[in-house]
Amino acid sequence: MTFLRSEGGLQLAKTGLKILRRLITATLQEFLGTSPPKNPKGLKRRVYELAENVITLFWCLSETDKIPPNTVLAAAQCLYVLSDDNEPTTSAIRKTQAYTSCLLGIVTSADPDTLTDSANAMAIDKPADSEKRMNLKVLACGILKNISPLPTMGPTPPEDLDKKITLPLLTSLLDYSPQSAASRVQELITAEALKQNSKVLKGCVNDSIPKPDHKSETEVELESIEDEEVVEEIDMDDEDDDDEVIEEEQPERKSAPSSSQANSLNLIASLTRPLLLLARPTALSFPQSSGPPIHPPTTSALGTIHVRALECLNNLFLGIHAEEGQLPEGAAKQATEVWKDVWSVLGAVGKQAEWTVGSGAEVRKELWEIGVGVLWGLARIGKGELIPDPEEVSALIELCDWTNDEMIKVKCIGTLGCLAQRGDAIEANKVIGAYLFSYLTSPLPTTAIPWPEATLHAASSIIDIYADEDQPYDVNFREPAWTEVLAGAKDRVKRAGRAIDKRKEGGRELKDFADEVYANVKGFVQYRRRLKI
Image (cartoon, rainbow, N blue to C red; front, side, top):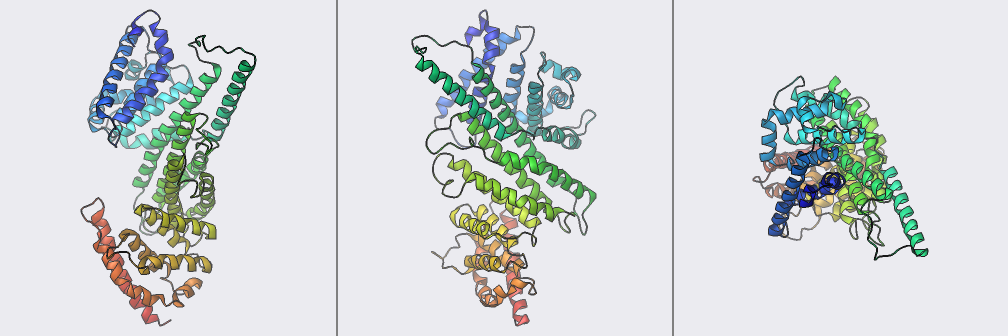
């Protein structure tokens, strides 16, 4: 990169910044990743080499009278990655008022001309292009989320930042269309291939002649689409954090939903449809089984966007049911409407045979696992209203049996337990009830309980389902004499509780849950015996 100090270096720097930005991001993510690098010494050397190149680049640019917009975006991208789960960096940014003022100035400005002095210091050459200006705002939002909580400063209190600034800004970006992006990429790749084939047929291709340095119109547009996808990924990350804020800020209710809860439901209604569109896979979301993806950056970015969109939905609907007492009016109806849409998205992801082997399998698997969390949240809201579909019930049972992740099993069991509480769904209740009892009655391969948490949730769901003996489906509990079967399973429930390790994160709460389930099983058996039905 030392060539940048020569004449023409500034122009080369401007054109190469996008590539450098991606290189910086990829290297930093690998270096700061949660899993240990395969070659730590080699990676460390690459980081130092990259740092030298970046310093040289900024040195060259600092001698100019303006900083190109792409340099500002590259700097923001670096800060976004560096501040992600990195306490030394977040602490340094948070404690320096000039830095936080600069970021807040970028986020709160309606127009580049209204940027604060601190923001102007960062963006001397303010992006005239609205897309670049928005990209910078999204990155600034991401950095602010990474370094939260912020100190009190300026006219906007930290607690109002999400509600009044960040959330409206990020929500405005949810009209992005993965389908349109994928279609345009396909058109560009196909047109470029036809152009190259035409040159070959005409004998115009000569490998001995060096290719020009400038990019073709196709390459420029593909890079532009890729940049939009990257910004959408960051937007989804920030939106996911804001969904958690919505969940945390809802006040505790004892008997009736508050106006705040109703307002949250309205907000969720406005977010759900665009998030579902972002979650739906496209023709380029996964590599084709016959070969590699036609444009790997698009496939990678789309996969991430789908995952983030489902994570947002997961937080939204689990947050609605996090409160005690009555749900907001219309919540159950909204859940039933979204239910089929989520299943449609998962259907587009593919069945188990498609997400267990082959290229793209990991992303498909991750989408299903997150999707089950969304279904669980919806099922808890629409309990008793959702009509269980035999194919959906079968798919949940299949996933529950297949996965080795106990939390996925718990989500499947929780969803099935809610579906079984539809009063007139007698056949579905019979299938689900028998499956839940299998966790309490199936022969154990060893003396240990293989899935203690799943076992506890199965027992808890059984009690919830059959707590009302007047339900039409209660016949499914009486005819197999499940009261005595449950009585015989008390020891297994107790052993499942003993298998919980209190030292692990959340272990103490889970241990309390286990004690509660065991007490409920004993009490429920006594209650059903007294009924004598």
